[in-house]
Image 1 (cartoon, rainbow, N blue to C red):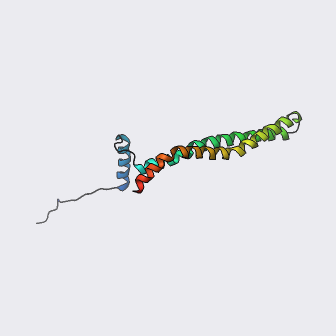
Image 2: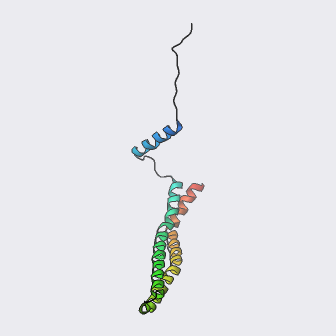
Image 3: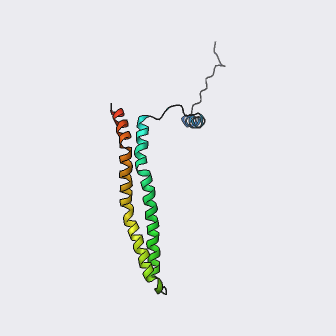
Length: 127
């Protein structure tokens, strides 16, 4: 007696399952709290975030000022803008030079502020 009607079909796709899981995770409310390690990473990342933004803005604006000053000082026929161009360019150079010390000062201040919480979390994780 042969059983001709018995069949077994199985379909599995890792990519499809992963995509389904990602879509499902978007619609489920987060129930678990942030782990200590994730919180420690987030705090460490936040120590430099604001300083990077501020120093980039200062550096970009200063570089643009330097460029405007160079244009004013070097374009033929703009002799009346030579001295103001030099002053604008020097202002840009000062801003470029000041961007990194401002960054380091802001990071140092933020790390001092976050130090107690980071030390507490790291001690908790090391035990």
